[in-house]
Image (cartoon, rainbow, N blue to C red):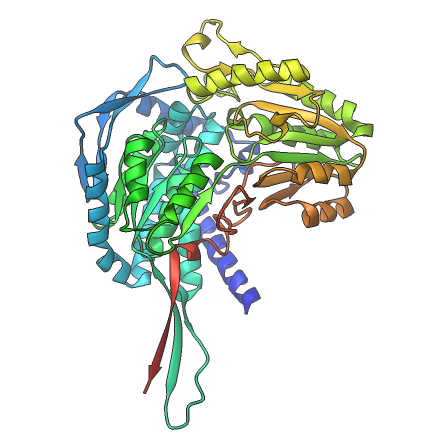
Length: 557
């Protein structure tokens, strides 16, 4: 039965991938159209760059607007505003956004609560149709959303487009699962009651109002993915983005609105964590919450959310300290490529970033030499330009922390490359107007140093040698986190790695990324231990069910 279900879901995902390729082929007049994923963007075609540049010009022409919240289908403005400036160049005002208040949160939750009986009571087929329509709208606008992600977060064009497309694919996947499982309505066994006809039905039903609090680094996928799952499950959503990246989530809200979701089903509020965030967490009408961010904040929300009148689900994804273990039998070229891509993609500001390289001693020097050469070749600059692979870090606080961490590491070990902030001027860019930091590779830091276990969330990775793979595994697992992990070695060693590593997303011998690059339906994304509260991975077989609870219906006739 389980194998049949998996095959059915895979067929659905394949069907939507084929439909997507057909749409793109018609639009581009090509039979070999390009499908956006993190893996395919390992070697992107010229068509992707042309579409991106066209969208970027359009977005840049419209900067600086006052962007409202969306509550109960209406644009809502607040008395106080905050500026959203690009980390690429802080002279660029992307827009002004609303400093929402507790009253705005109350209005959003009230709207969601009022809309829920109709939305939650709708036939699941109708919900799937509307939510899938929203995903198609996101996909249609993928280049514009990708360009905004570059300007707002500092992502290079491949990372920006990957984040944008992943929104749609995460939502599609949740829709596929609901459809493949018949709306999660299942006949159970019949009671052997003489003289009576008994039927028992298991049905998964929504909780009601669901809150999504998303992070700055993936304001598309990590807002849209949870929101899509919550919506197709029958919940109504109130979404709050990080204050550094409010624009992307507004574009997502517009896609849900334009797809025809009823007023109040999806609401978007902006403002500080201490005001809007706290009001969302504290409201007893909220049935469940999805939070992505730091361990400190995530655990605080998890504990606070448990203090209500009854237990409520809290899906918390809380970062990582992700290792790459390299065996003496590894393909070192592939290992170096995968490590550099995962260590410095998005400036190391991924919860899946590779921040620890643990290598067997006989190949440590050669691997370090390869990593160093690839790190030195990275071009840092305006990430909207094709030639630049690394952009800025997100804000002044991260910029300051980069200086503090690199100073600490230079005293503890040896910085092989990087360690500096970039403030010089060129003909095309004044680096001092953004938050640019060098990719930093560090060696010879004692294995008991605190930064082997502390998540820095910056373009810094550390390398160390060990005498055996068992020693490497002990070090890899000796952290509070368990999000992603990578391995390079032979096939028997890879099987050993999969069995022993304490992480939710694991890769072996992958040059596209040692610890990064998950994709819905391929590598579902979620963590163990302090990295995740649910034990289930987004974009996987068991995720959308987290947004529902079970009811057994027994009928005697």
